[in-house]
Image (cartoon, rainbow, N blue to C red; front, side, top):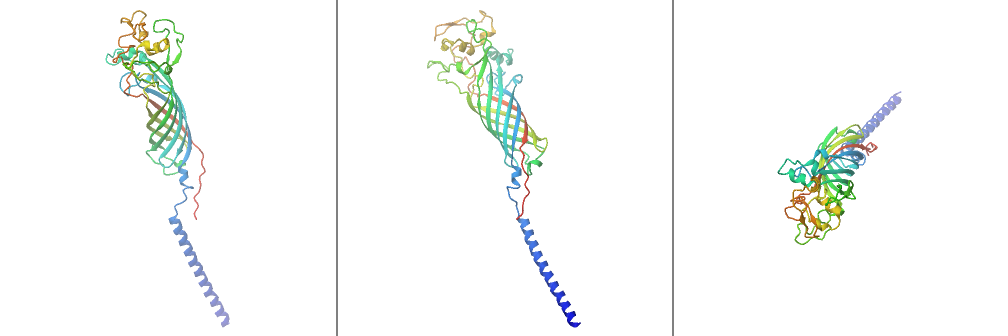
Length: 357
């Protein structure tokens, strides 16, 4: 009986010691795991990537022109009535809490008209523009790469992105342009014009003497044809609003700062009409003031061109070679503004759970 009691006590002691040893091992294991969890920062591929995503967008745009055919000589003068529509598509990549890079294509039209925009009662600015009587349209095809930065960062996944945020954007664009104007009914001498009523390309005509052989003393001497493919600097502001988990609505106001003054085919001085030779279309598209007067009622005497010896009847201050006969202002480049309403769809992305090791 005594041996049995000793055996039971020995078993109990051994079991207690074993339990304590297991408990100590478990405590050490838990401590190690806790330490790992406290120092774990997660794999960027599992969480950080959920802040980066791709998106596609479609947009409706309104285009406004600022240049030589604006209502006033101010750099930021425009005729709102000539706002023209445009459409666009874009692909963007979100890099993190604030930054997005977007590649876009836009197609739209610019318009300007002295006759419709100038105020003939404004003796200081409007009379010159109204009597100049130039007009144009220009269909723009633009490819751009733009970086934007949000004012309010999104530190969570795209699913939990902020409800709205203003942002700034800037980038670079390449665009194709082709200024056109509607041909009048008659040529410079009042004869019927074959192209009457048609929209004609202005760049090939060289309306400021770009393709003519100008004398060394000519005001526009050295002028060269302008390129129809140009570079622009887009920049502006916008605001983005979350519609649901995968869609955003944005509104943007942006300017395109250009390196050309010929978006409207107007920049320098008038040239003598004789430099156009037998190109009657180039003459009538270069000088259009006579369209405001009835034939034979132009308030100036005719003059004989020293270039081709022909007699021309032009309004004083227009259509003749003279340093004071300005057709445009070459010191300021043209600008166009784009107002955009954009709908964006976030491309699907798998949400990965972080794994601990």
